[in-house]
Length: 153
Image 1 (cartoon, helix red, strand yellow):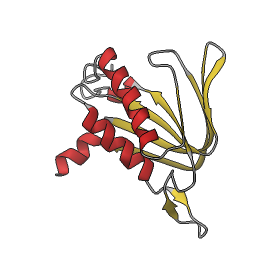
Image 2: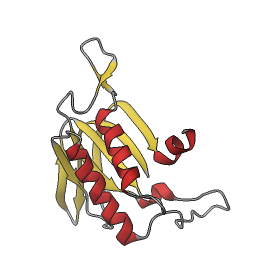
Image 3: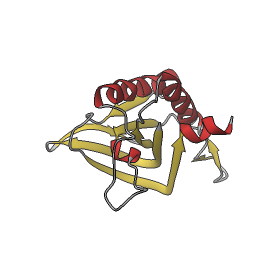
C-alpha cells in the first residue's frame, strides 16, 4: 500500500461540481492499493500516518503528529500510484489491486485512521473523476510505502 501524504492548511475533493469532502489543517492522503495488499498493510499505514510527526511544534520543529494537533484527514483513492513505468512510456496499472478489493481496503484504511485517533476523516469517491484542491503547508510531502517497510524486517 502506498500513500502520498501532504501536510495541508486545507483540502477538498469535488465530483460533478459538488464538494464531497473537505478538511482544514491536516493531511491530504492519496492512497494506492497494490495487488496483494491486505488489512495488515492498511493497519500499519494508518497507524504510521496518524503518528507521523511532521507538524511543527512551538519551536518550528517537525515534532507533532496529526493527533497531537487535532488534525484532519482527506483520503483520496489514487490507483495511478500503483503504476509500473519500468518498460516503455505508457504506464501499466496491473500492479494495482482489483477495484472491488481496493475499495474495501481503502474504506478499511479510512476506518483505521479513525481508530488510531484521527478525529475527522473525509473521503473522495472511489473510482470517480475527482478534482482535488489543496493548500500545501510547507510544502511538506511524504511518500509512505508498506512494501519498503516489510522488506526491511
